[in-house]
Image 1 (cartoon, rainbow, N blue to C red):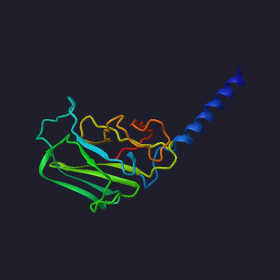
Image 2 (spheres, rainbow, N blue to C red):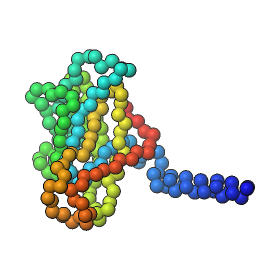
Image 3 (tube, helix red, strand yellow):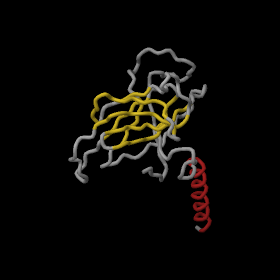
Length: 192
């Protein structure tokens, strides 16, 4: 009986070590944001500002309107900016084609999406990943949590029409019209 308990304890410790090695420590490296959504280089990025409605918080103030949105590096260097002549309502969907102000594709790396409203600024991070010639590379994200009361930016894959005939360019995956994604987040960080 004691031997079985010792073996069980060793097994649990071994599995815990494997899990820790696979997912790593809780906190990200210093040059990586706590949470982000990943996209392949050249893939359009869709996003919108969500104003949640909840009975637990007062959402009865003046409507929040969007005046501009921009893309910047984590250091705050402006990459792309779009300003509206007339403010637009929250919930309006936007698409960034991963191009800078001069129309050039941006480099792989981390960027912030910043939405400016009549009541302040909101931002969230994205990661642009260079596609490996190997077809089986997984695109990993660490999605940010959604608040029940505070506005937040929802970032997502732009919808694509399925089964539209597309040539398979350098990809060996047999179903080129599928647009699937899985996001897993194992962490403890919260950006404020």
